[in-house]
Amino acid sequence: MIHTFFHIIYIQDLWVIALLIAASIVLCSILGVLMPKKIKWIAALLAILSLAAILYVTIFSRSPTVAELHLIPFSAFERAKRQPEVYRSMLMNVFLFLPLGLSLPFVLRGGAGKRILLTALVGFALSLSIETVQFAFSLGMVEADDVLCNTVGAALGACAYPLSQLWRTLSHRSNTRAKAAFD
Image 1 (tube, rainbow, N blue to C red):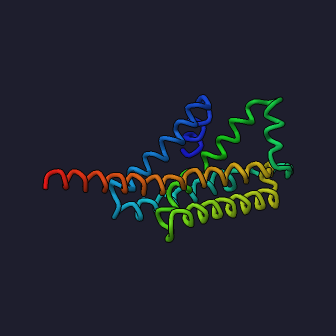
Image 2 (cartoon, rainbow, N blue to C red):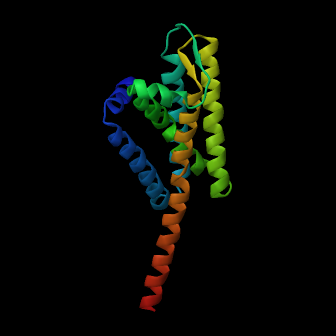
Image 3 (cartoon, rainbow, N blue to C red):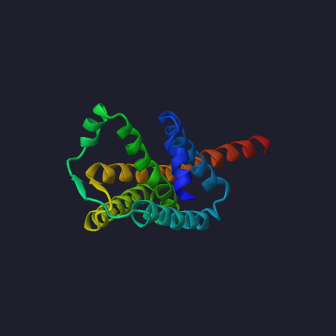
């Protein structure tokens, strides 16, 4: 089922995938405003489900093959010049970690900056761990760019939290002004 979902996303135009990423960030930020008391529990559940999906897609659904190493950061861009499908693969690596990034800041504590930084660090550590396991068990190509894209996905998702805080502040100001106008 999870492979079918990712396949449906994978075959979309790149702009559709980018739009889905942006829409996910906005939707999650709005949920943070509309459901402030429930968002922590919803986010915790989403974090667990996204972690399970990430581990399934990157480790548990794979069979051993020959391990390949591509440890030069940003080398995927060079390969993408010859093989444009690499851009799609990079965007899917961003998309894979987006739900984790969307959820963690709503569960973690601290200011918005700290939550975003911690989320990016968790994304980085998880991705690095996955790449290490993939190499150790010959579960596919190990790429520095995968770690970078996964970290970007987690960090992008984390942007939903400060956006949610912004919506909340704007909503509070608007309500205060409306109340003052009627007084």
